[in-house]
Image 1 (cartoon, helix red, strand yellow):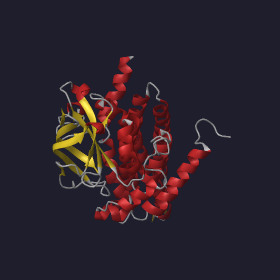
Image 2 (cartoon, helix red, strand yellow; image 1 turned 90 degrees about the vertical axis):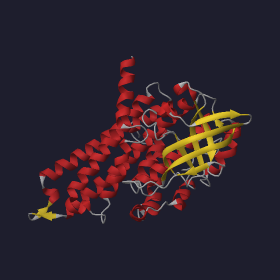
Image 3 (cartoon, helix red, strand yellow; image 1 turned 45 degrees about the vertical axis):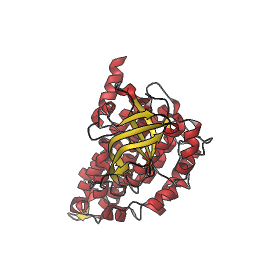
Length: 381
């Protein structure tokens, strides 16, 4: 018998499938991808064979039509092997979902078949050099000329920049702040699209990150997602799910490092016994496990709220993202401490997770913005 706090048989089967895929295709190669900055496009494409190119794209559109809890379970499982690769797949899913949920039949038919099979991969373009946390201040301009929008501007920190074929882009069509933002699908090979150099990052080495530049790019009006002025609302709706997924990537990374720490402390001997025999080690492990389970429980709850469109879904997604990413980084940091000097070496996986998880408290909305969202909702009552 299952209780309301247990995963269903279907969810456990999805988790098992994602874990097997990770163990076979991701975990054995992740260290090399990190060290040599390899973008494992073939493996990412393989994940689409399991349906992971359209996790919450509707079945009518060719996706597997799952909920946000199933998506979180998948991201968590893949992050156990490589958070960077898991997060990259999450971003593609967020962009595909935005087209499916808010796009016209024309734009869906045009792009979703290739995106679901990951013949083409999508980036999400909101952030600009001058518009980070204040996303509504974005300046990338789209001016309507007949059947086209002419787009000019730049987007910063774009995952997949220069590699991906599709860029779901937030543009400014009027000066009306958040109400003047419009979402357009822009293709890599449209004239006037160019890319900055691949950024040299602390972590997330298995995925390229670059500035995306638009120089009078002519984008067909049919590529608009939603109506003019709806872009910011669409961008924020996408981020509820993105925040759950990035939190789930922290859970997966933290679980991996906790498991590694348990094994290591049982084997490592000092003062004539396993260091797992010392109460200090035991208490650290107990706190790591508790903090991980607390974050997981909140994230799974938030995921169900987002799936169900609960009125407090955005608040809970923000809470869960904040807690899972903060706890995840602390757990990995404590695992590194338990490994001692060996934790600092690239021969062991801990330092890679330490670097990869650090950015999770910055992207998809900083953890400071998460606190702002939560407190704003509380004080609005």
